[in-house]
Length: 603
Image (cartoon, rainbow, N blue to C red; front, side):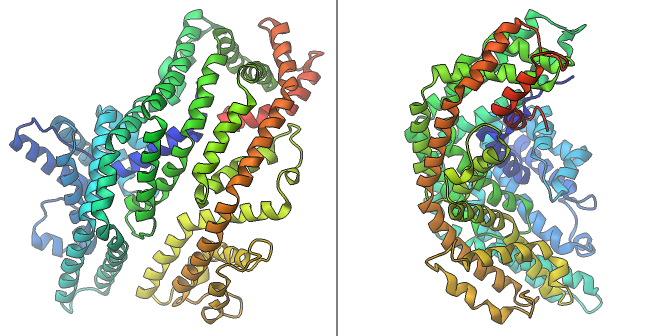
């Protein structure tokens, strides 16, 4: 049986690594400044060809002009080849050794799994990391590529799209009458995609010197962070490090096995502590500012390219996670002090033996009570207050904090009381509406823009059949803006009240007006919830303070579990035991199931 800490994927490390590997997916990798120029050039050229083949089996980088013109997807080829040139340039400027570039180029041509990843609209970053691990990519390799790709998009993205537009338009104008309507439509579709991207990159172009300066000033700190994340990513699955499933023989766990797992856990906590020592608060502030700026720069860009869409989504996640680093590191430091070898052995035994799941409560109760004894509530509240200041005014960050708190209230049986004891129903409604808007702004607006682009090429497309979900979500935002509870001062309401001109009798926009309709609702929501996120940062912090107090007040529940753990002397409670009912009661009062769900131990 495997033992997995994939549960930790909820913390800032995993969220940030997703950002990095998705960025890597577009461009992929790099070079050795000491390599012979001819060898380097050959490796980069092999990458170009491999990347084009990975995108489409009928493509290669070296197709002749006549072969390209005979492609049914000629416009897509022209666009992708330009992107490949940019990524190859990024590779040539990065620090990955030439031999690794060659290995990657070969994998792009032959590895079906890698090809599926590149062609998939839903990019699986975990699979990419596994493939690159097999090619011996290191944290330094990832860092060099990420920074290089970012710089190329900032420095040359706008000029690239300008050139592609010029080439595509000229080629479309030269298409003869014998060319199929489908191919002409394909050109129009790609031109529309590139025009949309080009428009979004205007702001990047105008501020690129300042943006590049910020990226370069934070480059060393990015190196520290990325190196750490990449080098421990495998550690987040304990079974791959300690081979836990094979450490159990005839139901017995050896002291050597316990030592291995304990050393691994302590090493993980030490790595977090080391990271935060290197990324001191002043550096963390600068890094956060840089990531926020990148998020804002790319956030308004629409593109059919999954890479830039991923950047838009995950820069927001990375920005949020950086603010949680001090709190996570503080908790990790004390967690490391509260875990000993007997506790590790007990956890391993419960995981591998047929005993009621409630026995996990004994382990968590023992750990939690030790944590409460060694960690002052005031210290946790101080860290929470710092976090509150960092996330004030940010829709995504306030939304994330409320989602976590709301989940704790909904799933926890601990005597925290009702949510209304902490926040009024109106306040809860405002925060829940903010979460809805956060989801809309990161996914559904792009879907509407893409639909609008398709509809311009095919007016027969139905709004309801094409984007039913998106229309429903935007209607909910419109409702919130008009809701006196959520928006008592009427902020941005005038933007909503003018939408009747775009709607039919059922309140649905027409094909030709759906984009204008959605953007008006988006702007109104952005204004309203931007204000709410400023007003409620302090309120969310107050709730966190009160929840911390409640947990400490209920520490007696964890003490009872800890005492039961000690009294059992290494044994466990069976379902027919006299103490089983008591264990179940404490298990519920201490919200053990909620904790196990967060860890991923139970579904």
